[in-house]
Image 1: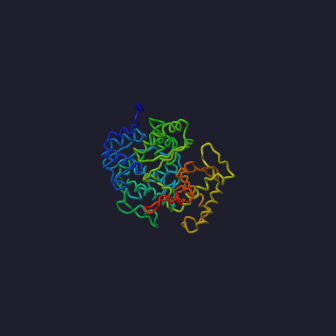
Image 2 (image 1 turned 90 degrees about the vertical axis):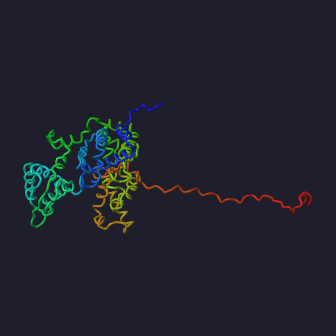
Image 3 (image 1 turned 135 degrees about the horizontal axis):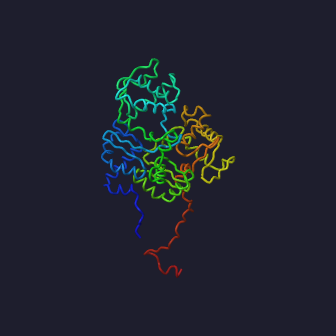
Length: 417
């Protein structure tokens, strides 16, 4: 009997293209997921012409599958992705919370200054905007470093450029002047949230993460694309039911359109990128913290070592105490003293928290009280033997000797001895 199910829009769209065009669209989709503001001179900026060429299928792909809006011009492409909501594992590592605040204040200050502005004027406008917003500002070194980090972030996005001088002059003993040029087109594309319809920060976050017209479908698929691990227990009941019902179809869809591979367990889905292009923090990795985290997982997941905790949970998570993590880390340091970076391991008291923080960013753990809960997905890194040893075979016995004859034998000799 023929399969009468409605084909997925993304696969249908790619099926209508030639193999080369379909591969190029999938490649551009991956690049836009990694760099939502794509421009010449930035990371993967050489693909802007290819994105412009395939703008129609790309806009349809993102709109139908994820509910994302894609704006493509000859000079840039901007993918308006949904916000992550209240998620402490997301964000630019180089920016502190105050640095993020200064990014938004700088964007507000840049809106009305035209094409160029002096650094001193821009900083004055930023601090004025902060005061207007009720944010206390100072002129100490820490505050100037936060402003500098925010401006460097905007430079990295291509929104502003150092035409003469540098923003690093802010943190010198005697602040130096600089001329800043503003790309007003990119500046206008930065904000993804609907500022005009939000009255509070929480309302803005809620509206920015809204799953658009397809509701459950867009919400769950966005999590699969953006998060390495999605557990059924973490989803609303209707989202979990939808994912369990469609796991195989979603796996095919993600692989075809974005090159992502899914691993399905009873507890949920882990999504990986074989090329590690869409992975901002690779794991496993070669760094000391990543290697200690990988080697610690087998012991932390072993229920026999968790006698002080109730390991039988409906969601499949394994609780671990801070003391257990400390003991496992100490054991690894003592057993392999020359295997680790001295700088990464010199503070033994801070090491367990650093190791678990890495697992939290990978969605392999969540904080729970004074300890953590390890995700069921962590079991995928448990060690396994390379091969099954062959069973020992009994020594071969020589074949029985077969009586022979020759032309010189007397055929009657045995019968007539």
